[in-house]
Image (cartoon, rainbow over the protein chains, first blue to last red):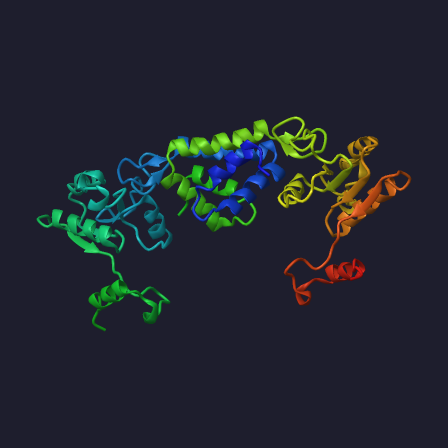
Length: 199
Length: 199
């Protein structure tokens, strides 16, 4: 029992999504065939086409955007003295959702990872340094992830900025809200102790 | 914090799939933006286009197909004396996957549902009767679902064929394999008792 090849092809396409196995892809594909009319399918096709056509990375900060520059870079009410450096554009969304940060961002589009052959020149470091020549920026908050590559990248950037007047900070790592020490991993506990504050 | 409109549009499109809520649709959309290149997106677009172009219902039985007639209707090795009547084309897939049935099918494309204004003329009954004029068919197995509409439809077809030589049967309903009586619903238990067999 095989599906017509157009259905098999759609199943294969949808399986690329995270968490979508053969069964789920099959369910989506059959729903498309059985429950969607041409109009609904056209709407999906158009959505994907618009992603291709309209979405690009902000030439200033690397954020995902459909405007040049992105809504953050063009917002003059934002604090131009602070910049959070992240690995990926989607990390910006996580911070923005908190509504607690009003500064700028810079997306590295990766991390330094010698074992994968990714060096400092392969990520958006040059554009970061160019932006930092703007004397307005007083603090760079490094928000790369807490793993070897993220730490290496944060340390590398920190050294690059050693001789400038810019304050370089690293976001705190520790036990998460609602988290139980008992279940925290070793690295998190070490970071939590290192980052302790006087009460 | 809002996404660019192309991303919002894709999220809305993907939410139409069964079991896909806002969070999952968001995850798929961001994966599309962050992890897929134009080539991968083109592949998805092409998959949907092929569904629209290549897939249609078999003019004989109503099965989902990309050939006319479908692979079942054109397979001369299948038993032309038995026909399973189902509500939807996808029900054929369920039966075919068992590899235990070698007869024909007929898809009603719906069920009689007076409360939804769907009468006998609104489903593929006329084409069923035309097919049954072929004297080869000896048995019609009604495999509509076990609910009011499915039962009404099965009874209606059964009455229509009363005066013919065709044996009209209904698939068995009862406790499923691995099912526990304790957790079975009332209708299933009633059907299981009605359908009891001598051991």
